[in-house]
Length: 214
Image (cartoon, one colour):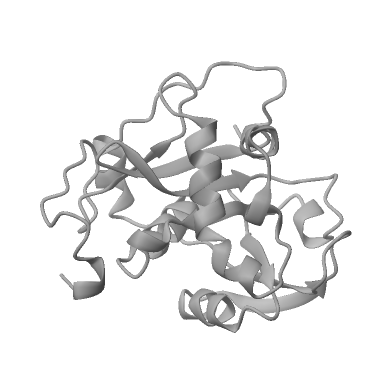
């Protein structure tokens, strides 16, 4: 283990699918998970962007906004020692998005994606994106897309390393920066068949406000 991560136990244990970190990825469950904790983790994950002067929504969004955004798609979390250390919300077609790519029937997108700084550099983000690809591919989407601030060169480099390509730019209302829109064809990963048998995905409680892909 690298020294910069020494504060986190080498023997960190989590039940369910095992990443080499000892973490699991599962669907966010309001019955046992906290939107407050999810929001606090997102604030930590986006703090670096905030210090760069980038007013990303996740920098300081309220608990209510976190809940609304998570409920609009399929929210997953990475959990270790009972603590949320990463999250992403996967969207099917978003007809209300100002981004034209997100409006397409054959495009899924990754939103509200962040990893706790203490757990970055361990492959959790890569694993979650691989999971997102599988999610999109098995639902018949031709592309998996996401956006990130153009000034965040480190994030663009990360996504490019995962096979994403810049396909457009967009200026979202209220932001002080342009966003790069990145996309890639999703691939269903054979290993995910093993993951699915080990994942503990609680059944989502039907809610009128949820928009879930079939």
